[in-house]
Amino acid sequence: MEKWNVVIEALQPISIASMPDRETHWDTTIIIPGSTLRGAVAEEWRNRIGFDHPLTSQLFQQGRWCDALPEGTELITADLFYSKRTQEKKSILADYIRQQLTSLKVNENDSLLPAEQGIVNDYLVLNQAVNISVSPTRNAARHGYLYSLSAIAEGTLFTARATLPREALQLLNETGQGDDISFTCYIGKKRSSGYGKVRVTFQEPKQDEESIRQDLWKRIKEYNMLIGNEDFEHGTWYIALISISPLILLDRFLRYAMAIDWETHICDEDEHKPLKDLFSEKGKLVVSWGVSSMRHGWNSAWNLPKQAEWVLKPGTIHVFKFTNLTFEEQKALVDLLISLEEKGIGERREEGFGQVIVNHWIGDKPKRNVNVTQDTNVSETVAFDSKVLEKAEKFAKEIESVIKKSQLYELQQYAAEKIVEQICGKGPDCYIEKRLVRKSKNGWKRKIEFDGNKQMVGEHLRNIVNEWRERDGEKKAGEKAKAFLRYVIGYYDIHHNG
Image (cartoon, rainbow, N blue to C red; front, side, top):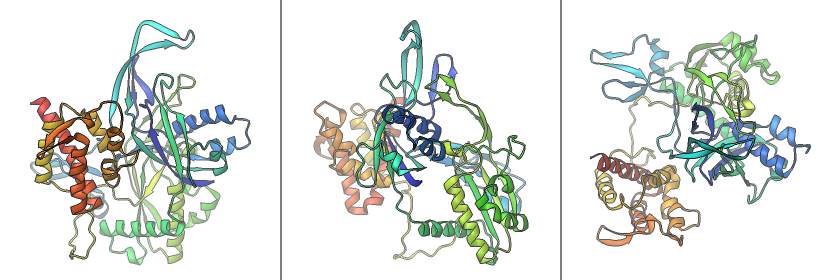
């Protein structure tokens, strides 16, 4: 089995139904569940290879498929609260661990309220459609019977992880180059009606095991420093397991459980059993913090609901405390945590459930006094920039009748490190270039007057971002470009509502 980074590009709109909201309406999920990805690849495998192939079991029963998240996705953890008065968010986990926090009252006029835990994406473009229902038995339209559904826009990029056999994936390879493996398949509902076509690319991770171990050591140390653990160097560690996908926990009697039990859920496998003494003598669960819900699903092949499960939502936190750890015990614990990040915790892990990340601070970091010199490499998010805002206001007035807001959302979903290339690059897959070279008419090719020049809208945007790149560098330009597009979208709304 090899580890893979998976990139999924939506070549058509995608609608992945969990359950119908009402009889004639379906809402899509904003992620591609691991079970859905596995089912889509299984259908492609059946059509091209056949289930009687000897690698079928290894690929679909022993392999691990994780949830695929769209770019720009944010995980809201259970420790994230916001001020009722100012709406500012902060993590209260450090205060809870150090002081055993019992009140969320900030002062007489303010208090802290919990944020909505789970996965959110403010940049995702969703389309709504109305269609005619077709009878599955007669393969004909039902007279006068309409239904509606929502779908994730074409062009959206998703990322995931997987552990799968290379020799099996090679049988599906179509366009992958070098060590990459790439092919197209269909995901979700209405695949015969212009929905669901995706390109799936499997890429080998570039990190080796030693760099992964060093990265985790660094995360553990930084996390303990941030929560004020002064005994870290003396072998006292706080370890936070944060779920990044729904978590299904069963106790020894196969009943649903509300918290991770180290003996049942962590040290249940043979390779981890030697660590039982470490947990029983030096470890304890400090806090289990999160929200539960019912997880539904829909089997498109059978047109039937999937088994419903009681899950702990993504963002649930379990904090363990270990005391008097020796160096050898620390190494053993780090190896265990690397294994948990790779394999997950709980039930149905092969479908993407139970994925966790260790000691990753999702909420706002506590402020520390740091002496910054000119040689220090400091990474900061672009703060409010009046010049960028002013330019965005002028640009929005010129293009709001030319470029749809959904197109701006689609462009803004690219991460800061990729958006500059998507705007300024001349490659055939770059967002702006692809639209400027098309023979058909589109808004990006319309010429407008801006900054004293009359050019195509796409060229104006390139000039703006190129100026930032030449002056501030690639990274800063990417952050400014995302802020610029966000401001433009905001002015669209102001002009529309005003």
